[in-house]
Length: 190
Image (cartoon, rainbow, N blue to C red; front, top):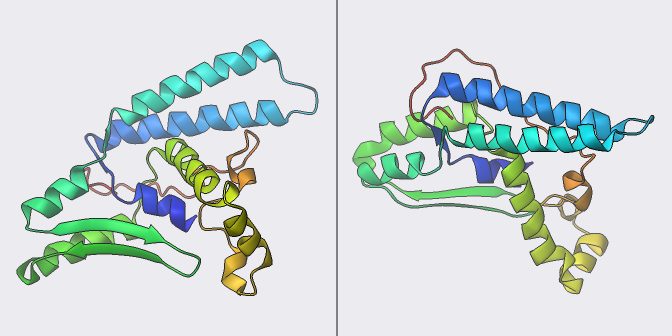
């Protein structure tokens, strides 16, 4: 989850109220699609196809409100550079060089994105994280075996998700993690 959050912690919004509705719609459709696929009575292929189409459309609609470069833009306007992040077995690190006279802005931005996060583009970022895992771990025998046989307790916790996290039947969903907040709808709503 830390790696997923790392991917989503840099995005802002163009219109929080509309985006919030769009994100809720994405989650509702995903939940219905997931429940249908997990149904023991068998899923109607036509209904699955209909929900998959609706899910893609809902994601596209919600994506129209995401401002992927908003945090970077604000930081650069204030003189900040080097915005980046990384996740390892032991930590998630966020990097940034910021002028010392802008520390109040830095505290405000960081507290907003970590205390009241909005997990926008969750399903898209989940797929990116899973692809990173396939490239870095599953396709490298040494990485895969070191993850399996490591003596470090934290090495047993995958940093780039696991294959089961991205399966169509995965319960990975931001709905339970998303806070419903009535705070101001600033462009940096995080």
